[in-house]
Length: 313
Image (cartoon, rainbow, N blue to C red; front, side):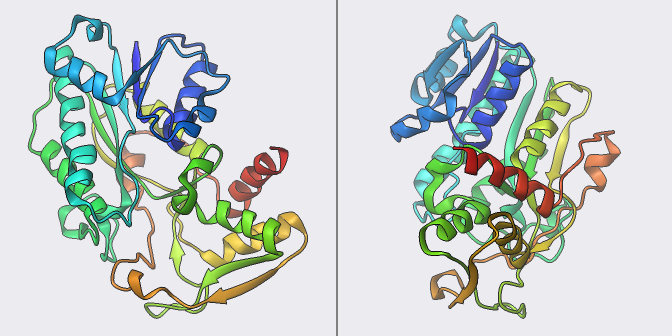
């Protein structure tokens, strides 16, 4: 039995579908379906069972024998709203829940592969998996960083992998609304208004020139499964393309795919000043040193593949 927490969410549901496509029929999804429309992400996936996150964590606390058959926990569940200021909620969902998942894997001696985030780097200009580069700008980034630090102090009995996702885009992110990817927003803006909108310049970057490492969700899932297939590899690793692309490149890909529309720049929001990563670029040295050979698509290839899925819906 493989547990996927956050299995109805963006990365989690893509992971569930890929596991099922591999022939697994023992995938158990753990999530919170208070936002009921997330169920759509699971349609067509022959999962073995579904557990609410509260039930799952209760079973962990009670050491319920129903979990004794767990072979791995792929822990993708979290509050991923980087603008959320409720620190108590963020720490419960992202820090305490992660410690409980770790406790289950320790008890059973099975792998834990969990979602960290490039948000741990915050205002840093370095993106290597080292404390000297880790400067979170918000409580979301801090919650992810703190669990990474907690893991670093442990001596686990089985594989533990933390994956620091950079800017992920791709299918099954519709439920994320304002937290969905830039590609998702620009696609829907174009369909609705004939325009795509990006922020004006900030932090020394020109209009739409802020640069981030945008990575397709399929490549993220491939990385998770590479580690699942290589239990000898543990540690904290970046997951991105290794190349920063300007937001303008996303806009160009969207406009080019649709063959119409115009680009407009809007004022940079005051509430994001000092809390916004204007540049990210994954250092993949540590990931590649494990032997992980997943190919990460660039923006042009990845965004066009994603838009083809959106256009078919």
